[in-house]
Amino acid sequence: MQGLTLYKFFDVGPNATTDEIHAAYRNLSKSYHPDGGGSAELFRELRDAYGTLCDPVQRAEYDRRLNPPKTTTATSSRATPPIRDPEVVDLTCTSCAKRQPVFTSARRFVCVDCHVAWRFAQCSNCRTASHVQENSSSWQCPHCVTTTQATWSINEQFSCVICTSKLTYPRGVKRFACLKCSSRYSQCPRCETYVIVTAKPQKKSVKCPHCGKRHVR
Image 1 (cartoon, helix red, strand yellow):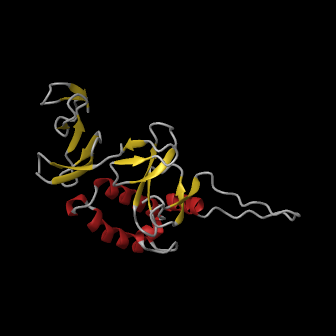
Image 2: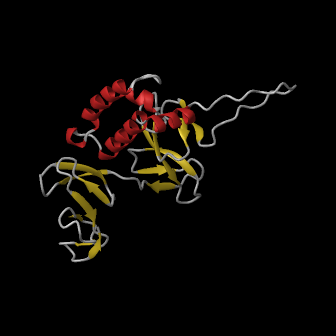
Image 3: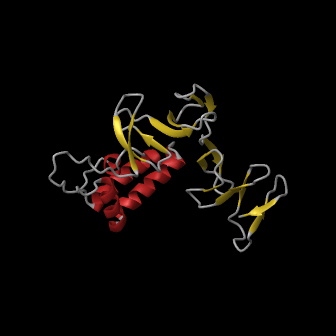
């Protein structure tokens, strides 16, 4: 979703009403919801984007960052370079050559033209950052030609032990919850299996039934 403005993502204009954004959110939820074959991570980003645009304070702050106020240029013999937002950089999609603004804090972005998802990754050799296609299992650094294995999450499926719903979650995530019955799961740090932690909420730790290790809920 990064690299795509929230308004373009919801396919509405910057002056869209809350009702229009809500209607767009309902339509996108059908495609992004894990129960419909979507990704839990993308669905979470969808909800965050909806929360930003429906909250007047957050939306005003987002609009300010998206369109910083223009500064008046003093008259001089030499043109003053435009002031750029230090939190935004321009990146060129290596798939379709589309140049687009991306927040420097983003871990990923989706090209506004070809819709290819990219991840920011650091070379294991020269430590230089590059943007890599998200569906790549390994990538070659354009600076030192070193091949590095991708370390970002890959979606996996899990059956809820309470309601038997199929859950989709990123591999390696420490905690997640079932979207249907709200049962919460936590990953055991020893055997890396997922343990349900909904029962007995007063307890501060939970015992893994597979390896017997107790860990913080």
